[in-house]
Amino acid sequence: MRRAAPRTRSTLALTLTLTLTLTLTLTLTLTLTLTLTLTLAQTLTLTLTLTLTLTLTLTLTLTLTLTLTRYDKEIEGLKELVERVRTQAAEASSMWEAAVSRKAQLDVSCLTARGELQRATKKRDYEQRVLSSGP
Image 1 (cartoon, one colour):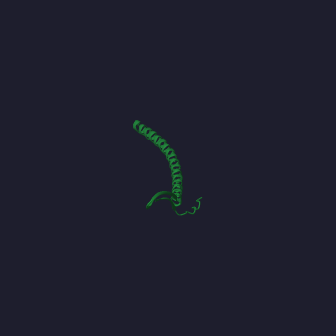
Image 2 (cartoon, one colour; image 1 turned 45 degrees about the vertical axis):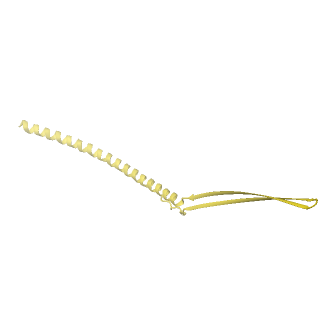
Image 3 (cartoon, one colour; image 1 turned 180 degrees about the vertical axis):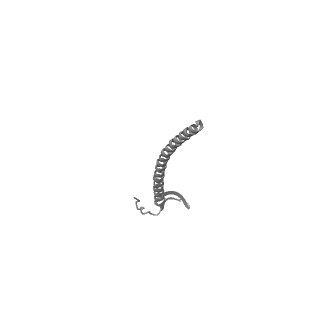
């Protein structure tokens, strides 16, 4: 009895790529102003400005790739191939058993024919001896 072939699904290939980029920028500015005023005979003003800028940039990139592939059609094809091979093996086994049975029949027929040939040969030899010996 042959089973109905199961439904095949198409091959699914899914690739998921996730890229995460994180950029962190830190800027620190320090300004120092020093004003010194001296008053004597003349006014002397001294201004000193110091600016310090520090910039730090950190970049982190993470890439994740996930690939998922299902080979349903290929699997179903292999299952069908296995089923065909099983069927052919069963047929070959049946043919082998029939051949072995036929050989056994032929062996019996051959033995029977040999026996008949030996009897016919003995009968011929006997008849020749009788005819040779004369009346």
